[in-house]
Every structure is written in structure tokens, then in C-alpha cells.
Length: 189
Image 1 (tube, helix red, strand yellow):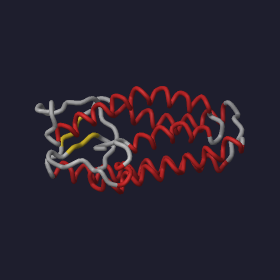
Image 2 (cartoon, helix red, strand yellow):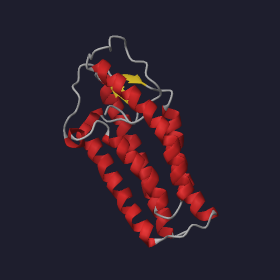
Image 3 (spheres, helix red, strand yellow):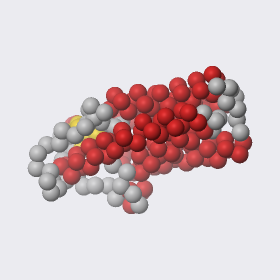
Image 4 (tube, helix red, strand yellow):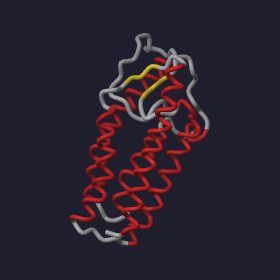
């Protein structure tokens, strides 16, 4: 395995730790304003899947002796960097409302700035792209496929949970009851 690939995976791991620090701070902000946490059931699965992605990248490359192939590796590195940029654009746009869990503050309007002008859940696009691209930087196609296949149904649950929580927080139609949601993930929008 190329030492630089191990450093790349470690850097993504460090980025995840930075996300958690931001998330904890933002959770305190939201909860202090009456925020409601929903979707706790799927959150541990999301954490495990993301940790598994990082471990899988390193293990598959080492155990299966995957080689770096420039024709695939460089474009996938570009997509990995682009996914990180999109994720942090989402974090910056949502400010203290961004979280790795689904936490909504009742009465707050939806954010429609930044990448949210274009799509409803851009952070999940970043997750999907990174989950496929990061392993493929060094040819770990089994890890890329496993993450993608496991992430798709988990994201479907997450998005459904988040949409219900956002509708409830905004007082939307059919949202009279407090959301119970499904397990948590990447916060409001």
C-alpha cells in the first residue's frame, strides 16, 4: 500500500473527528433552543458503516494487494476532495444547525442557501460520492461496492427520518405529532 494512501485515509478519519466536535457543539446549541433529536435507531449503524469504510479501505488494499492505478486513482482522488468540499460547504451553510444526528429546532425555517438552493440533501450526495471514491483511489473496489450497497438503504431511512423531522419542526401538513423518526445521521438538511 502506498504510504500516501494511508495518510489520505487517516486525513479523512481526522476530518470525521472534526465533524464530531462540530456536531457536539451544534447539538448543545440546538438543544438549548428546544431542539428535538429523532432517528436515534439508525445512527449507530451509520457510525459503524463510516468507520468500516475507513478500515475497509486500508484492509482491502493491504490484504488484496490492490495497486494504485493512475487512470482510476487520480479522478477518484479528485472526487474525494470534491466530496469533502461539498460536505464542509453544507456545514458552513447550516452553521449551528448542522449535526451528525437529526436534531431540529421547532419553528426554524428550512435553509435554502448555499448548496441547499440546488438540492435538498447535498450532504448525503457528499457521503455517497466519498464512500465510492475514497476506496477506488487505490483500487479497493470491494469496499466501494459494500459501502455503496449498505449506505443506500441506510440513507433512505435517514432521509425519510430527516424529512419528517423537518416537516414537524416547520409545522408542515401531516406533522402534528412529534416525530419519532428512525435512527439518526447527518442532521437537519
